[in-house]
Image (tube, rainbow, N blue to C red):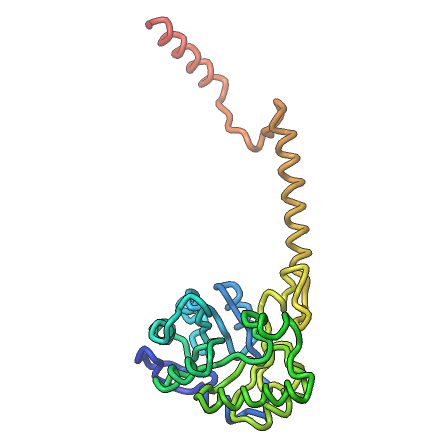
Amino acid sequence: MKKIYNFSGSLSYRNYTIKDLFDVKGKKKLSQINVKNEDETNIALDAKVELLITGLNSIKNVRSIAKNNFITVAIPFTEFKTKDEILKASLEALNKGADAIYTARSPYVVEFLSRESIPVMAHLGLVPRKSIWIGGLRGVGKTASEALKLYQEFKTMENAGAFAVEAEVIADQTLKFISENVNLITVSLGSGNFGDVNYLFMDDICGENKEIPRHAFSFAKVYKLREKIYNEKVKAVNKFYKRAKTRKFASLKNTVKINNTELQKFKKRAKLLSSQK
């Protein structure tokens, strides 16, 4: 653990600093998971995942659990429009415990943030929100011309001050060359085995949805368990419905009893009260 002062000015400890990430680049693979809530954060910590990424609205809660992990916060693409709005949101995230900011915006935004000493992770390759530019959701960097353009984009982000790039659905050998020839931490999401960090979403890792992106893969099928739980609940409610229509709904163990002596006293007094009206 490295002792640091975080961006809010508090003494903290981190498993990795940015210098550490560069020190192990090309020597040691790291893992990163996108977590959204307390359960997902605890699972990632139990599994000893080194790096986490989360949303602006989740960072405070995630940091309260993952006290020492390097955490990146994603700044929504369209919610914060101007550079000043993005800066304000980024500083808010850092104040709540983020160590770095992710943005899929332009190199101009990356440069604007990095000039304020904000660690920025950019996004290149298949950027889903920008897929209208490249003909839809597809792999990137499969031709020499496209690979060269991508390499130039990585260099542009490097020059803009980014410390890392999320590299999504890039041809594996293309990313290998790029990663070896740029001074950036490459975070591979569906881009083969040559990034510095391997990254997936918790949803995909656990198989929480029946359909997953082509570039992702699952190590479990949680959706089947959820289907089973749903079906078991339906069965239980059907049994309740049928039994609720009968006079044998509550069993003896679910019923509060009054002994016969008290019952007779109650009835006698109730009748007396009724006769006095």
